[in-house]
Image (spheres, rainbow, N blue to C red):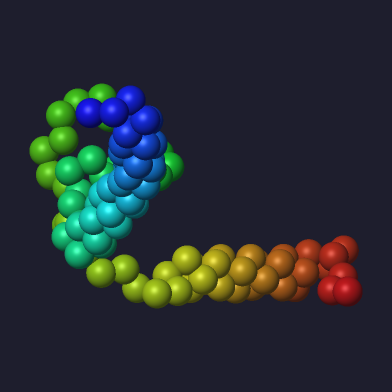
Length: 106
């Protein structure tokens, strides 16, 4: 084998390898993207959320609980209670003005 053919062969091999490595990396990356979008897994999934546990101080064991899991809550329950509270306060203020003549309604 002549000595001049060896550098040409190495140059050609170097060009082939320098093109094959990025092409192989690109194809591997595309395969990974395809696999993860077509077949998603939750093996390493994590949920980040703010969790605040609130529990009252109880002196003894709890023998009966008056609520059930997944119980329905009436929408506007807090608004309803607030309206009752305001109505009672207004009624008491008006009756106080009626009972005590020194208080005037503005």
